[in-house]
Structures are given as structure tokens and as C-alpha cells.
Amino acid sequence: MTEESPTYPLVSELIRRSRLPWYWATAAVTALLLVLLLLATYLDGVLDEALRWPFWRDHLSGLLLIAYILGVQIPMLRLRHQAIQSFRPLLGLDDDDFDEMVARIVRPNRR
Image (cartoon, rainbow, N blue to C red; front, side, top):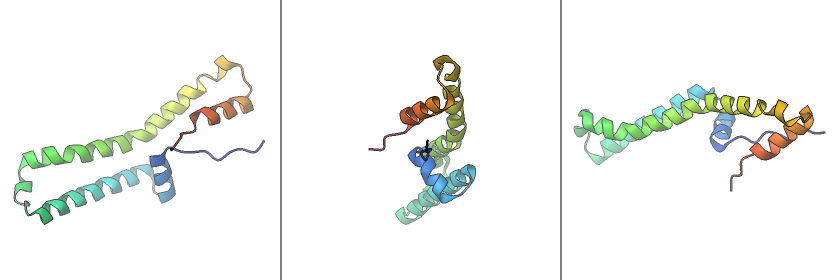
């Protein structure tokens, strides 16, 4: 039986294709978003307002949320894999049938 190539979630696929380690890619995306925020602040002409704390509290929350999601995704994918493997003894299937069923069910639909 030929083994199908795994289909990753979209974010995992993009980071896998970048060939960066996951945490380096997260740091790069966070730095890029921070630079874009500073650039937009500078171009808007409110850079003096950016030195006050309420500005950062309001505008960095989205950036930190994105960094958190990217940082937690790998441990969550590992936990998902462990949870799927815990069902193996309950189903009574051999390894090939179980792997085929998991590949069929877990594959994301990107439409």
C-alpha cells in the first residue's frame, strides 16, 4: 500500500515550506507585525502618541494573540496526535487500517 503524503493545516503547511523552526517562524511573524504597527504609526503621524501605554495596550493585544496561537499550535498538534493514538486499542483494527482511517478522517478540507 502506498502511503499518502500528509496534509497539514494551512498555517503548519506555510511554516513547513518556509523551512524555519516553528518558534523562529513565530518570532519572525511577530517581529514583522510589530514593524508594520510601528510603520503604520509613523506614517499616520501619531508617533508621539505611541509612547504612551494605552496605545500599546490597545494595539499589541492582537499581535500577542497571534503570537500565542502560533506558539501553542505545535504542542496542541502533539496532544491531538496522542489523543488519536489512544483510540487504537479501542477499535481493534490493525495498524494499516487504523492509519488509513486516521488519514481519511483527520485530513483538513481547505475549501
